[in-house]
Length: 273
Image 1 (spheres, rainbow, N blue to C red):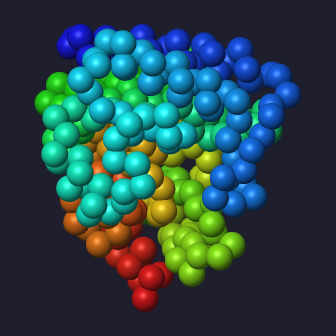
Image 2: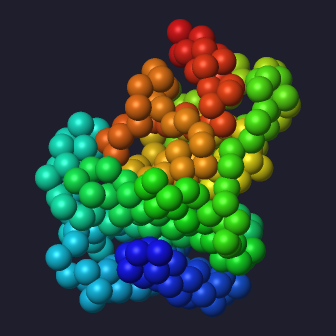
Image 3: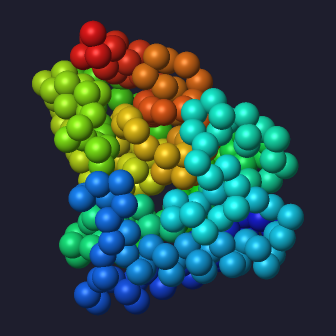
């Protein structure tokens, strides 16, 4: 285990403990990009804890974090983010609380994740589910793990037998590509579709064969950087909607066990016209 991984595991644990302390309190809620895009004092406290820890232990590293307390690549997206990340030796991508809407309502599906990229390539990731005390982690070339157990994606080979997950953008009321057409196309072709509201856990569950696939659009790199490495190291496949390799600047994601990937992509393309 590398020093960076040991640090990430410990920092995610501390952030998870802090989030649990806030969880059953009344939350001061603010809105960001829309009426349903929330941030609470718990998001900010968790991010401050993580960012301060990184700056103390790895002062030369850069940080890209959801609530903007980091110092790298803010305001960038798409190819500009990928290009910027490729110029940074070490970049942490921090999601201090994924599933804020769930968290604010007392709905117990939310998590915290950290990923470390070396010149734009994710090499280490940790995702923690504090309420269930589950931690998922991966290092490039060393596999994906959950509490000491090596993870492997499922062996489901038929799309009709698959349990898949998805999500919807905060701006879905105004977006033309809001994932509703894709949802409608996939739903009758699979065994079930789940919408849990926490991308970091959806991807961890694909890596741990609890789900066979996951797709979503309009998220940010901190939402899925950690999960990308988990799925890849567990033997899965991760691409964009066109089947191209996923990069930090990619705007959408399809992650699966690999066996059903082509068929799922075909259904999604059909829905997108």
